[in-house]
Image (cartoon, rainbow, N blue to C red):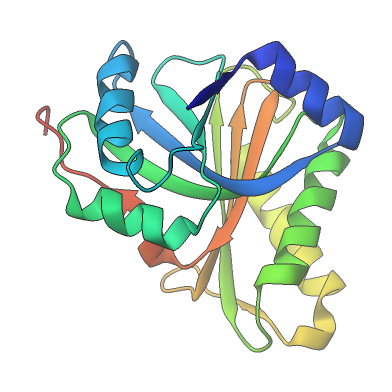
Length: 194
């Protein structure tokens, strides 16, 4: 296991504008990060010895880099009983945007790669802390329109109720995580506080 400090992550992103890979954003109760991290590492470390823990500026959030399949990691965590984890979001890219157009660019590239022709999608945005984003709903609407216009040849359509794919954008202060996946891959775990 390797811990990547926040300033190291910032340096990595500044060199290449974005970092691609398999990431898990795990949310927990603020102050319970250590316990939640130990639950995750108990489940994943035997199969993922090269797991990376990225430092996140906000309490209640854990960011992990897993080298192998995200689906397998999510299956392991879904089967495992945990008491402090709220949600687990699969992400494919991290960036430190200077302006909102940088986020649009990363999201559009991921959507181009991950959305198959004829599928439906929904944009879901979460904002935590201070960020460059003022309005989450306006961002979701703008990004959805941009994806529809830019990928017109794929014949995509928006479905807000039951989409085939979610385009997730998480604003964590300066850090932005982006993922495109099926809604079933976003895990909601029961906790001891439920």
